[in-house]
Image (cartoon, rainbow, N blue to C red; front, top):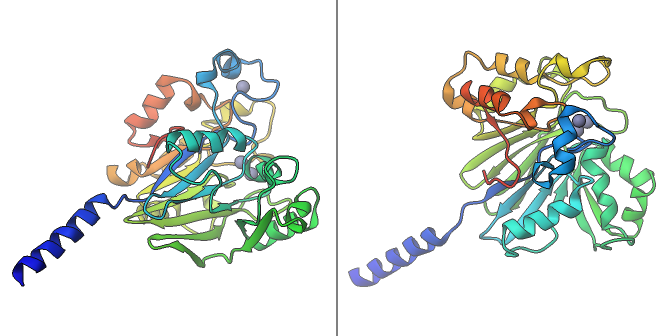
Length: 304
Ligand SMILES: [Zn+2]
Ligand SMILES: [Zn+2]
Ligand SMILES: [Zn+2]
């Protein structure tokens, strides 16, 4: 009897060893305009025009569950063609080419217009679930060309309720919440999700942390990885433009908010959604300063 018990115990031990934890892959980290940026001949984009290895995709994450052989995409960016290929290459074709579903934060061009590639003109997908908040859903349903994706059933919109958890698999669940942002066409979502033992926070766009009804420091403490809005490093990048027109927390402001926190809390913060002007995209001294202060920068193609 004892022998049988031992064999069963060993069997489950081996199964557990083989069980792969879910993880997140960063498929893009630039602001909506990508990097390099349309028409930019300045120092920030000069090298990236000439050198493909310096180019960066627009902000996007893949949430991957190896045991279920499933994955979900966060944001449908204008770079989606490159990003689905990047995912396939990074995961050695172990998953379906298309994700199980796509989560969208809001109706600014860098975050949803990649959906156009799911229509008749390109992939002609069949009822791929698109998860978004109510105003974003209405926007897609009532405006062409997006409404055609709905009527031809290329996509099936799954309306999310803020603060309500959607269970996607054995160990994967996602919850949306709203954040203050320039909400011209839709509200703006942030996402928190659990994947196995790990918890994540994803807020690529927000006006200012102080305008939010939650405390960002406390929210970061609750998770293991927080991918947060790093559009601008400082006011230097906004010469000739008012920050009120394009409000974002400056990276310097975000770092200040966390200055008295433990090194563990700081290390959970991964900056993402870099504008082409943000020196953290390309200049080592800026990247090193952020890292020396205990924070992290999201890396395209990296696993978290
Ligand atoms: Zn954006
Ligand atoms: Zn530039
Ligand atoms: Zn936005």
